[in-house]
Image (cartoon, rainbow, N blue to C red; front, side, top):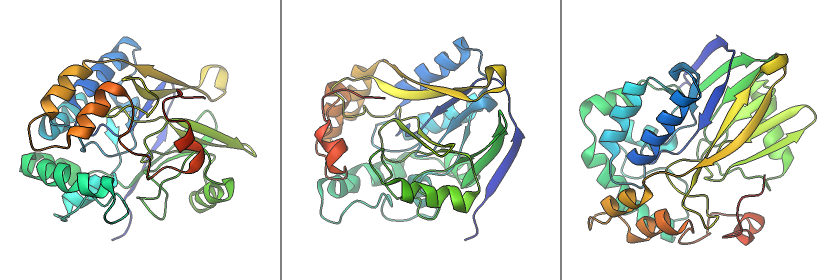
Length: 275
């Protein structure tokens, strides 16, 4: 299938960036409130995909996102749901803990979504591009060629550079890996704002987003974390249908395992996020 790429032209003012809502309604409600308090309009709020995921309220999350009017690209989960696939397409190693957990949360999410929500998901683009403070910006999920590719801070720059070359971009906003970071090299900037649906394996229940700013005509950015009603999120997940381990992670801020992480990121488990 050909990629659907939407060019939304030139944007000015603050832009709120986030990813991985993962069916976490309480986190999305809090982020929407943050955007409103910062006077960031919905059209300047951009999600890197995976609106649906591990938590208990996929239908409510999609409907709130739709009501908010923020913008999102497709994550691998949305593509699989759109296509009626039998798995999440997360590229977890077969037989791994993450793979076995996905056999619980993915069919749960699939069973909860209305036709209205599936239709909304189906209308999302693969990528969004725009100009900002004189820079060409591309929003993607994992990698441009492989939506499920895990790209981290420690991923060699050469792998990131391939994405810049293909998209002819100056700035890439990406998601999928679950950890906030940025990496700058040769006037190119890779920004992962993090996800709001799950903690960042840093030992805290808070979650992460980022804000772009064009004050003075120069592009700057900053990462932020926030707290939300995470105890309610965890309680709702303890329904006998979703992995208990993910409900525990919502509280502890520690991932059940680090099997998808490179050695550098795995070694930082519980030591906080260093940006």
